[in-house]
Image (tube, rainbow, N blue to C red):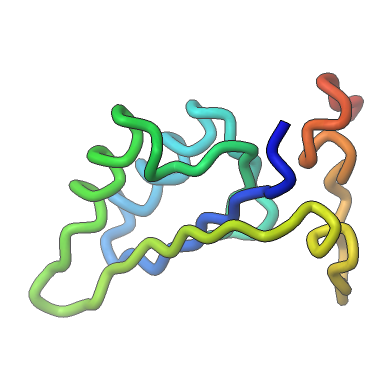
Length: 103
């Protein structure tokens, strides 16, 4: 099991593409923790199906600098994050320590 969790964040100007990225990440098992931030247990750039789809949806347009940023963070560091506001996600579930999330 990986010692890291992967964060994916994005700035996409086109609403349609932004929504497609969110749905795509969810289909591949990533969990939303903010509007444009997802977590997952695998590196998205290592997925030969997911990564090209993300690249296509993030194509820059004439008026915006679209970007998707993916980075690894240790699970220990993730658990030590500080939060202001409501964060109701189950950290054990996000970290792969349990496989069922109770809502």
